[in-house]
Length: 503
Image (cartoon, rainbow, N blue to C red; front, side, top):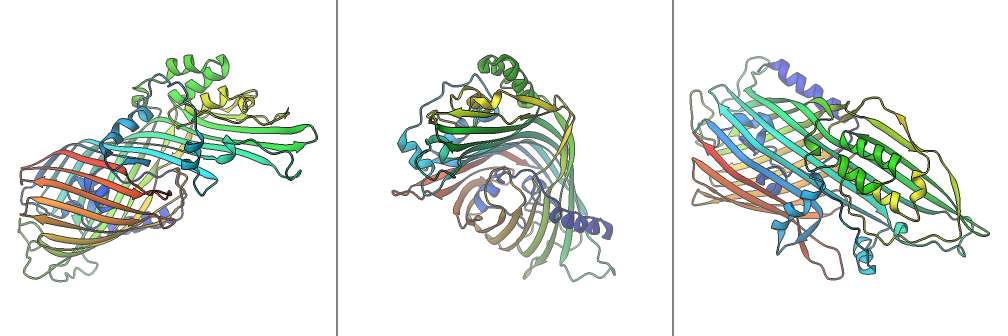
């Protein structure tokens, strides 16, 4: 690669800061991402493909080929007790492989206190990333990789008034407001990555210090997509309340067909069974393109000569600095796209009915939930399709920066990344991760990190593996501490690398 490649990457980096994006999902595909909170400067092989493709040039082993099978991770914001984190994949499966809808469960007062402890708003997010297969090969002056990846995110936010009744004896001018918002999206990627050494502008080389650049263009296939916004306002009157509600839905694929039948028939169970199946997210509803890109500057330390010409030795002692841009691109949804909206209707109520049914955010659940709600079913009275043209949604672009210090069996690293306009209803901002990896006997990598998220919330990552050279397997978790009266540790992420073969 030459100077034009680095110039192109810098242009993309600037573009990302100038562009809003739709969504964000936690980086949990590989155990290194879950345990280390990033690894922008340290990740190698297939772990670098979607994180920082420039690092494909960094040799972790003298073998030049790497086949990876069955890498995957899940994230569940509510988490599971630390005694049983392996249940997370089973808990998340129904959110992305929809089956017959469950019978709605009643929400207890204890559930409400747990959900809204110290806040008037509750949000929940589930996401997954799976890389079923990937192949990486490294030459003397270049490295390449090809991989498949599937990603999904479902997230909602709801306020406490949803489960409360208003007091007409209060402020006669005060509105009683309920809202619930949901985002759901799945897409699949076919990506090809390439990495090269960058020649300096004046052909000057600073000893063995080396700058790598990597680009990974990809083709994207959209699964189901929906974006739902509902707001219900109650104005006190002499005889009770005057209600106005507004429902807005943007959908594509099988989710749009589900809504269409739900509106026409009013039978939510039949609409679900006719349109939402375990394979719905495998039916392509749109196509797009994207790009991951990165730069890594490597300074070898001491007697490490792995960066010298014609060397095939892995890098053992180094200081690295990296920047990366991931998920620059967009998907255009063309299969059964639809935008739906209610016309505002004023409806009087003598009192506001409480919602006592639990809402979990599974596919199609919010639409069924509103349609069956005695208090909010008016949202469907005038729900009409206002537009059926194709629409475009941007990818969850993120900017990453990181540094790593490696000295034989010990690595220390720091990572920063920033997300834009996330769809998981959390605060945008920088995330900071401080991490390390220690290798015991050379074959047992142990990983750990502390990650500070926007708002000051902390998480701890931990992972371990078995690296026998030819074969490697790894697993990792990420934990957080609940802020309840009796704090407990929960796992919100689990990731595993089933098998990695080098030759």
